[in-house]
Image (cartoon, rainbow, N blue to C red; front, side, top):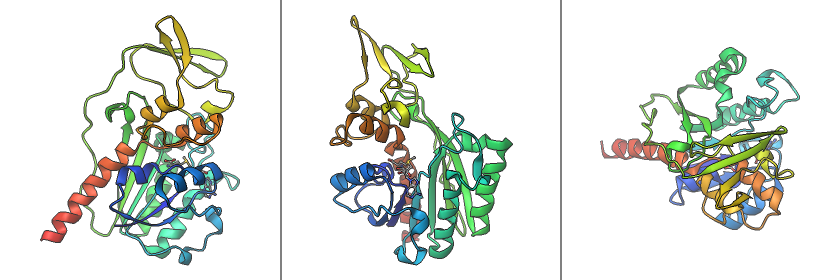
Length: 280
Ligand SMILES: C[S@@+](CC[C@H](N)C(=O)[O-])C[C@H]1O[C@@H](n2cnc3c(N)ncnc32)[C@H](O)[C@@H]1O
């Protein structure tokens, strides 16, 4: 399958989809993300702001994926949604601009779960409307990483658009939860939060800034910050995937990434469908 990865970061979608696909165009404006992408996939990442990239410069493709910036919709964010012209929410319309020209068969988007409830669902309604009017049938599902072998409570919504006649790819029935044996604390907004139920709190992009949001492990007469490698494991990334960045930036890139195991599970459904179609 020919794939375009927008807002690619350190390549969470690509890690999940695998290298048997052809990645025909990748974009992210962040220099550190570009560095890791190039190092891990030996593949260049266009670092122009996506708003400045003409759609006809992007090669034809079968699937476009992107975890578009979520500050807008996050329950921790300002919740201004798609309506504010200064806001990152407008980047959703860049996806619409590109798919209205390139018309890929599949569109797979990821965002924070707050997208579903923002403005009593009106923002998500706009997302559905815009994809629907371009001829996509749409399915979505809220996933929690804790059901994908990674004991982190991280809820994200994945939206799958299939051009023309759709098929049931979602929902994916989750496996059982993964717990770890221990206690975690986290300093957030000046408060200490305790997590004793065996799941880690959601790793965030800001956990690198000053380090005070990086969860702390408690036990064995010690209290210590999770290492970069432990954070990578909790995100479903290969250990060492983000190695080479300065410490704060490394925590940030991990906190921004998506869990490749979820991308993998959705791609498996798409591949199954494509296989059956070919054999008919
Ligand atoms: C939520 S992160 C996506 C992370 C990615 N899915 C991963 O697995 O690492 C959003 C990304 O969008 C990029 N971004 C934000 N605004 C952009 C723009 N205008 N053009 C291109 N990339 C942009 C950021 O640099 C960031 O890496």
